[in-house]
Image 1 (cartoon, rainbow, N blue to C red):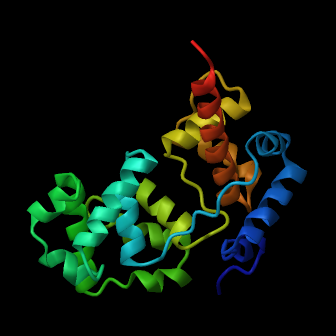
Image 2 (image 1 turned 90 degrees about the vertical axis):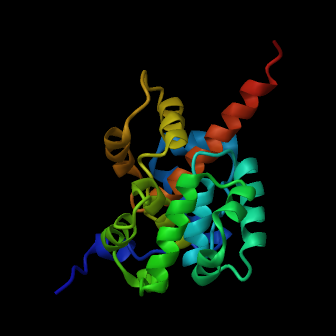
Image 3 (image 1 turned 90 degrees about the horizontal axis):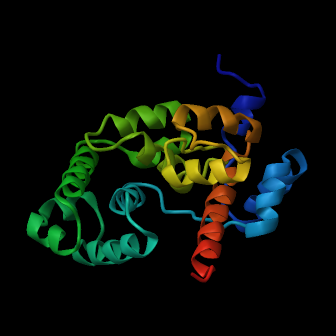
Length: 224
């Protein structure tokens, strides 16, 4: 028999709207002075939902290790080259077309691996009802798909409220600044730190990302 305790119940909480974000922010503000302070500084974080399935996962892969502006531009060109955006369509494109869209060879290989797996029976939409552990296992079994990609898919495509991306560099830097740490926490340390923000770690991550962007804007506005 599966667990029916509080952890099992909160694992299915889904962020679908701005009101869900506000509910998480209210809960975090009540419980955590750090979250209250960074929310006061940066305001409400964006919803940042993405469509589930092949398109959502492909967009995450395209945006890896790129600025928001660069990722958006490359995604627009990739989506325009792959119409309709489906696994079968992408597999019919030549590498040259994808390179012209701005994709690296490594990302092209990963996208082709995902597309081939979908054509061979991988049902990404079926992951909606799976545990986070099962989603991780299904995604990271694909060559080129790592823990970060799986974490971000769970957070933004599945909308799990307690999802967390401990390996994200910006999240680590934001936590270091928000908590006044001497060194940037690694993934293991950040996972431990984030226990205090359950069952709203997905909203805590959004708040930290918003705070990171806020502090970078302030730094860039300081005159030399």
